[in-house]
Length: 317
Image (cartoon, rainbow, N blue to C red):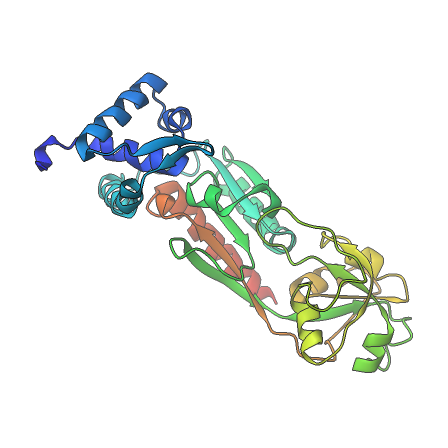
């Protein structure tokens, strides 16, 4: 193949086509007409002597040759974008960019208020769309449809960039009149009724019930308790970190929460914070983003802002 025949635009077309597997969506992504994208696909087929995309019962599907090309094309396009990305031209004070950020409820309760305050000060024209984990898939993040995800991740696709924001452990929040408060032992903990707050992952959530067996993953707290051969008596299941402080006001309920959330919720209340009577591993809150946005000036600015704000919050503890 003569390299002089290759139009760089065709590589951009191929990159988007292989992500979307849909000519119409690819055209919309690039801001061109569908006939123009169809013509681009025709030229790509001629260039590589391969159909690239074929129609199947599942829609348009990439050929084996196209899948082999995909990582190489992605790398080439990313390198070109980095090389021609303007430097020093992004002005936060005048931008009207929309940022779409997936945040867990934990991140929303602890970090988001600081991010919003800083953005309102430095970039008042910015619009923010905070999405829940059930709104977003890894594919959305990988394709740059969502700017970043801030969450606790068991694992992430290797292609993603990521940065640890901070590490947190767990504390128990309870009413000082709770019968177990003065003698907070493991046996007392097990005798109490508990509030469960979801471990938020990517994808749609599912319901839970108190009779689930120990093979069902309920999160870090219950896995740590199971490791020492016990199971707690969960009586309230919630997906929101705003709820436990209200619920723990009952003198027979205990909430086991990330320490930062417990400290925030204990302020201005008569609730007390106690360390769990068993070991629960600490966890990392991370921010993850697509390689498609890694060199984008506006995206880099927001990542720096989040790093600075999280460092400030760490110093306050």
